[in-house]
Image 1 (tube, helix red, strand yellow):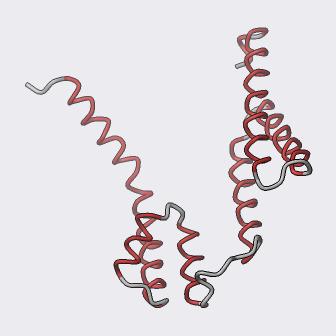
Image 2 (spheres, rainbow, N blue to C red):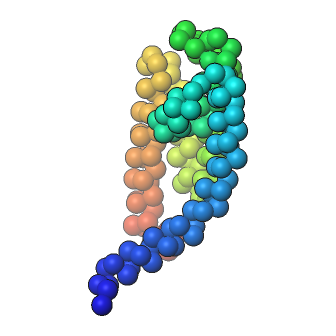
Length: 155
């Protein structure tokens, strides 16, 4: 007889595979396109495979291949080159909008944005974004807990 824990793990694994296979199918054409572009840029199959394993950002792979093909590889890339900064900000805003479901989420996002802007004037580099995100999330959780204690039905 099979132990219950094994049966539960097997069922959980099957459910995970069923949920994840459409995503995997979606990555196949992207991976093949990357392989073709990387090969045309002069990368060897080993280099292509290693980049696919080591770089966990598909867009970064395409950008790296374009830079290598253009002879930019190895040089310092100035901030904002290729519009990457704008693309990352736009992607973040799109992801954020889909996460805002309640007023507390909106307040937390606004707090994080305002705090990041203020800290950007004081702190050099990009550390201000991390600090603002952690601070706003902490304050948001504290506010949510306080509201939940006053009105448990407001969850």
